[in-house]
Image (cartoon, rainbow, N blue to C red; front, top):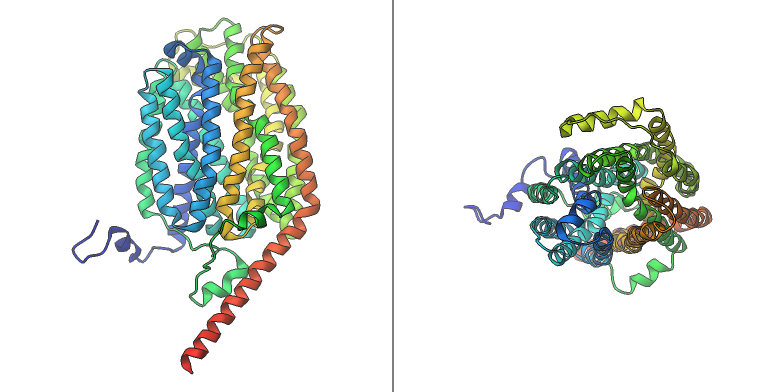
Length: 494
């Protein structure tokens, strides 16, 4: 769109004094964090509603679990393509396109009348979400300097966890009586926030790297872009292999946690509560018991400090957190929930408040909250430091693609964990009555954190060398670029 002077709208914005300044960058990070939260809300809204949706669409709950698993898988596959395109061109445009795609498809999911329609639009939604997973990561790493990436990546990771919690909350509160409503609400919010992309700042690739400061100080740009041949170079970095394998193993366990609300819904149904009441209160319980994930902020700060003193610091922290979380998470699923009292004939707000209050007044639920704080708190140490490691290990023009690779393997793990846990819980009904079958299924899949922790342990030895080599490469490129420019200027004068 042109104004009277022939300037486009985006060019007009770029003439404003605040464009590219500190406040503008903070605004951009906030927009990215909100949108990362929203797209994870879109992914998490369905599982809490499986029981309600299965009845309305005339399918088994396992079929809806498979649809969610396929959604995760499509996000994973498309994120590699989005990431590669982002490493070659304008990332801002791709993010706008991706957000519009998932928002529109999310709305169409909400008005689907059959399971087939629901499945198709969920897969289209996944295509758009794949963009945020890889391209968004690449942009954020160029806005934040390496020494503070752990802290800011904790907010990035928490925004996704918050989005998942928000989606579950929207599902339980808005969708208990009408499952379509939360899909439409989240879709509308996505379209609204997509408009903010017009005002965001697209950083220059690599501008947050200290080694490239000479280039930008002289008004130059870091002009390198990914090539197909670079894929081999990325995969030759040993730490990249370990972190990608870790992502596959850990997300099988993470994927199973999508069924955690269903465990508490089943526990409340076993106490005699109806499906709608159990859906609302069960999702609130599951959400409250995942509050330990906020320890990620401390984990990010700790990781930044440790990494400054030891290039293996983040790997150490991820190893400790991943392996240490396992016994607490398994114990959490088997703690009983006897005589959890909820008010009769309460409205939704009263039911939510009574559930939250019950967490701290019911001794067994209070114990579960303490155990969950330890389990999810340790697990959250991985969230910011894994993302920071991906940045530290790879060149700026490779990060979108590497993030896409990580999302691909993580998506395979999430899909497997989600889908297989659903099938396992159905199979376990032959030996364990509900909700014990859910507890057993969840506990078994937490064992996948063992290989994930061992892969991190291998990185303790490889990351110092690989990070140092990545920094030397950037320093050499900066020196070559500055030297070439001085030579060009000398020739021009002559």
